[in-house]
Image 1: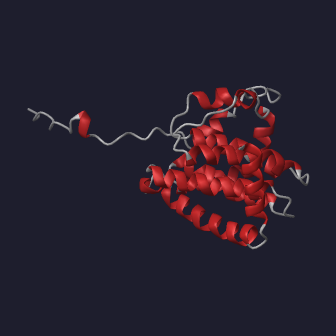
Image 2: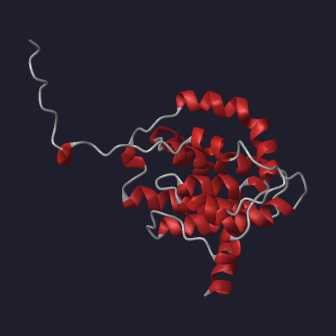
Image 3: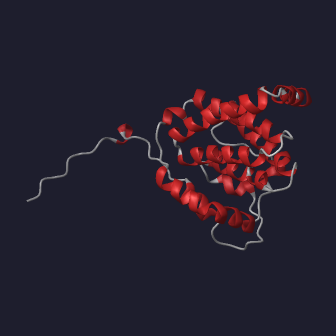
Length: 219
């Protein structure tokens, strides 16, 4: 006769279950459907929980990879700043203005972009995992990531030659860290972002001047 199973921990003592909304969910979101269909950003984000900021950031940086000078940064930069400000203010899920929520990329555009980075994404999918939550979940860490996104968004908006792909790649890694809840990757992002901000921003004086201009324009 088998002995009865040992009682497990009570529900109130169980650790929170991580809901996988990582790279696999992102890929599945765009896998099927009409390539000409416009995917509305508001609908894409409405059912997401922990990864909503990551998906929003992933979609926001797509224009940064358009090989037309001045176009990508002018579109992606303000969106990244919006995301960063919300994280800096402590929001756990992004608020998307209506005129942005009603817009979004074509499914075919996402297919093309994801096809280009598919190999790298799938390799990263095997490496990334939820870890070091203290670099993601606490309010100070969440806000610090938001501050860095604001500054990187400002740099992306500036007409600094040959930097769109560089900042776009940095922001892609931020999106992946948020998607997979990977604190190790987020720590790497913090270090790389600070280096970029110091080198491209404060060394040229453009970052502070543009930040002040934005502040005066908005407030």
